[in-house]
Length: 146
Image 1 (tube, rainbow, N blue to C red):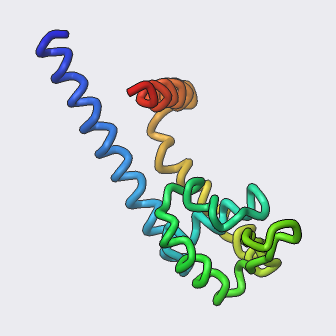
Image 2: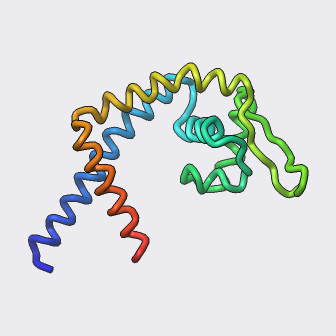
């Protein structure tokens, strides 16, 4: 492994980090216009697209520390976007469920959200986005080996 090889790897890491940060900052600003923070949006979007979720598993699915989940769920519950439901088979498990108000809210904002993300990444052609998806998946999966 030569010096140029190592420099190229470092450059890839920096470019990837900067690209992620740039896109993420724009998306987070958009989410704030909905009256939510990015974590609240992620929880609501998860429940909308994947259905009821045990509170204990939400953090892992949206990459959030479990201690913060209670706070986020409380805030979404106060807005009447979700509710807690006890598991009938195991009282130790509590599910988060999206409410009708939460569904209507997501259905109202999500088309604008996905359109904005499309605009942000449309500098790349369809084929370039496909290649980027394949390469980034390959990279992400390979990191698990270390």
